[in-house]
Length: 316
Image 1 (tube, rainbow, N blue to C red):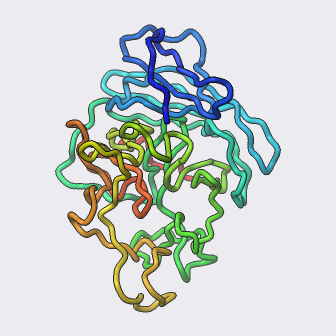
Image 2: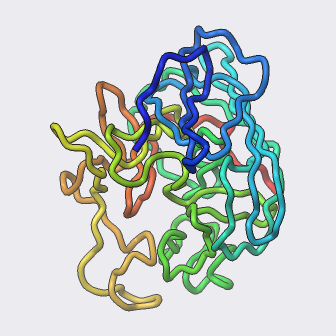
Image 3: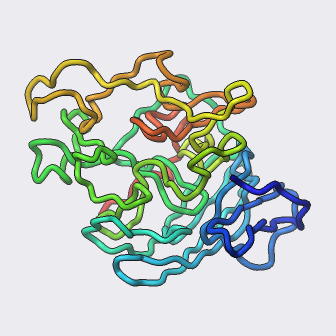
């Protein structure tokens, strides 16, 4: 459980006693004076619920370990405000140790990632589907979210090369049977070494029995915030539930077998069956945002706003 906040200087990070394993990141209002040095967010546990990316403008750093490869790395993140947009630039190194349990084909390599998102997002006329051509979001530790796998049953080795979005039997990287080698943070690396999450980043918010609704932990490509898993339900704090449900029966063709969540088409949206809409979002305290869930689609299922072009992937 997070410690209660005390009065702190602007942009100060409230830290727990050394015996505790986590830290609390307290980022104050945009009008506060800029910090003179990078704020250390190593193992930070986020706590704020500001809905605009502009509230988090600052420079951040962390020192972390690639556990299996016995490497020490430095993370760098800068969030700036440019007119009505936020510019988020990082080297894609997380603020927590990683790869204790992963099976990475390629070791993590530092990147030059830069994204632009609207500070005051708005709803589009209709939702925008996720695409293999774009990253989905960036978290407040500078690491991107890339939910879609380029792997389908019966295409190549099933892990890469399935670039036609209409192809059936696309794997869900979060499904245990898919075997994508993610680590304890539901992340792994792409062929160029870019570390990215496929679901709950685990280390950015309290995972068990929080005393308050989860904080903002990142921003989607359309500018809407991403909240951790816990929401207020009257006087209770509980995990939000997705409105996607496993289909009944068995698959027609392909791998056959029961719908068990190995493939994204094993799921169907059933309006009202959970807390969240088809994009995995909801209104909280008058603010729309996406919510991390334990089941598909994990973070977001589509965009309610218009994704910024800066999230389009570079051609390799």
